[in-house]
Image 1 (tube, rainbow, N blue to C red):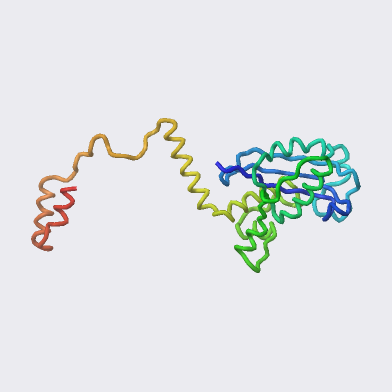
Image 2 (cartoon, one colour):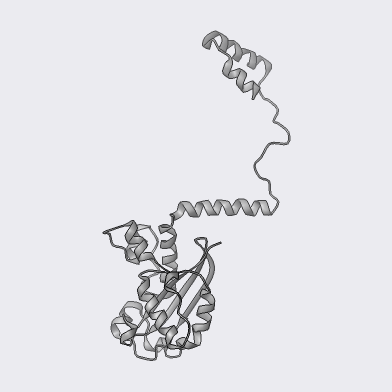
Length: 233
């Protein structure tokens, strides 16, 4: 099955080259477009103060991350969780820039750019000229935003996983996979599957009813070919 990682980050600002840092990272594991239940989530000490404008967006304060691990302390767990899977992110260049800067800053190999999949680009191809923010896509696909009062890496990764499912085929695909899984589980458990009956059902049509019907066909329709064909079947 195809394993992918849906990722979101929260940061102190917009550009790591100007001193901004990553302060939260959240990942959701999916296989064949269905969440597995495995997640990765960490707050990160950015080793700098968080601007008020950033706090207004995600609600993460200096006090919340002052005792959090620094990125070099969690990078091993993060890269182990990601493995060699593709990474799904919304406006992926933003998240990739911070992840690459943090990895390079602690001497770790960068995740190859070709492994990053940008759901913003996917949405722009499908809905050209329309708003394609994560919020806008959730509303378009009728995905609940009730738990998203502020931005949060794990919450946004969960929402993005649902959006990605829709962009890749939607609930029809999910239903197909669910039905296939149910059939596979029943078969694996030794349950009955559809097939020929071991003993045909006893006909409930009486001889008198069959004779009356044949008389009707011969008298009114002037043909018994269809009935004969059904008898033969």
